[in-house]
Amino acid sequence: MNILELRDISMIYGTVKALQDINLTVQKGEWVALMGPSGSGKTTLMNIIGCMDKASRGSVVLDGVEFSQLNAKQLTAIRRDKIGLVFQQFHLVPYLTALENVMVAQYYHSMPDEQEAMAALERVGLAERARHLPSQLSGGEQQRVCIARALINYPMLILADEPTGNLDEANANIVLRLFQELHQEGHTIIMVTHDPDVGKLAERCIMLDHGKIVQHSNRYEGVAKACVNG
Image (cartoon, rainbow, N blue to C red; front, side, top):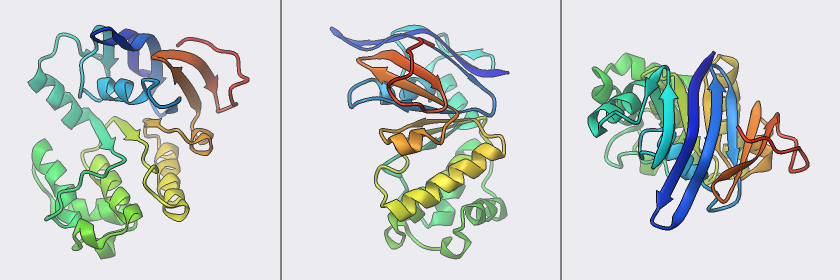
């Protein structure tokens, strides 16, 4: 079952075409890697899917809801209720503990529940660090707090933008194992990455270049794979 459909998506900034006629479907429970060189349009596409930007042209449909006619408030509600975001830069509130950072996401969704937030931190192996501030956590621990925050409202789609980009190898492996577990549990994941080893973990790799899909393969097979748009 398709959870996400992108139809003829283009993003234009003045004379710059950041995205050109992107067509893509993502099935429920699938893990898709978005790859490509810097400036290829990966993050722009992620921002459109995550309701942080609106496409210049085309249609985005998530769980049967089409984005183009929604206003800013409605798009915020979609992002809050249906999407879990994991960022490279963490974006944790520095004066709140790990537990409180997770509870903030609950607050904007419904009602904070400390027990549920603690369970989310335990899920990512951080129950013993729940009362620590971000400055007292390693980069890998901060990223796991981000994952707990993304999961707390039971999103139907997890979007991760370079989630291992700021981590050393040991912490990156911990975070990637978490994503593998989430995928095995049936979560739908779209992950932006520049790392071929990370791309290999996904079921599909979508390669972007100059705003276009130039390669689309089931399981990552390198640039020798024949290119298919969408």
